[in-house]
Length: 275
Image 1 (cartoon, one colour):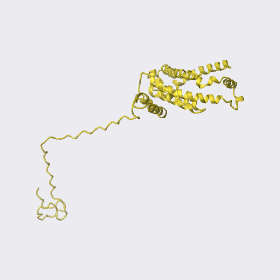
Image 2 (cartoon, one colour; image 1 turned 45 degrees about the vertical axis):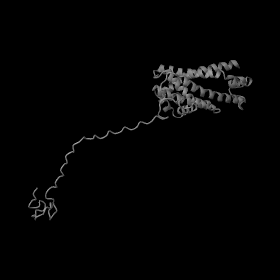
Image 3 (tube, helix red, strand yellow; image 1 turned 180 degrees about the horizontal axis):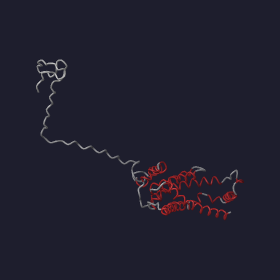
Image 4 (tube, helix red, strand yellow; image 1 turned 30 degrees about the vertical axis):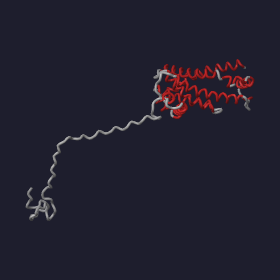
């Protein structure tokens, strides 16, 4: 491009610039700077950018692996399977029941629940015997039915002898383990809330029997076991049957209250007849 005779900025006449592109008076660029010529692309294969590498999937661990350690971790020892299942049920029941896969067999769960139920019963039986061997200080202030019960047990110590009951106790434990989830399943079906079969409901309550170990605590052990078992079972029913917590509690309370009423009436009849 030709250099103008006058500067467009200061309008002064330009002297010979000797190849310079700027006004010597004001520094104005007289002609635009030449653009760099675009280099033609070299012939040859074009390399596409490499696709991003997908992140590595986390390896299965004890926390995110599906299943129950007692049933689905044969590589562990029996003690490890017991302790991991016990801690999972009682310390994080939501995750435990979310990871519990569906199975059609109840035998592994029955054996697991029986171990803790039987252990808790042995402890509670010995504690009960030690408590009934001595009359309480406020014996005279107790209701008449309890006074009769204390007198009967004092005269018949074999009635609460744990060694005498060791044969019948396993049968009674297995009966309770089977009848209670059966009542829960019937209650869920009556309300139309049953999303799983009886096997799942049984396994929920059987693994909740992890709390039976608390029966070893003197005096309050039985109550701790009952409330902890109830809470864990309600969480299990909620997670596996896809119902609310209130629905799970209601489905459990109705048959339990009915059974407790029948049991109390039966025990009262037995005590009165024995006395």
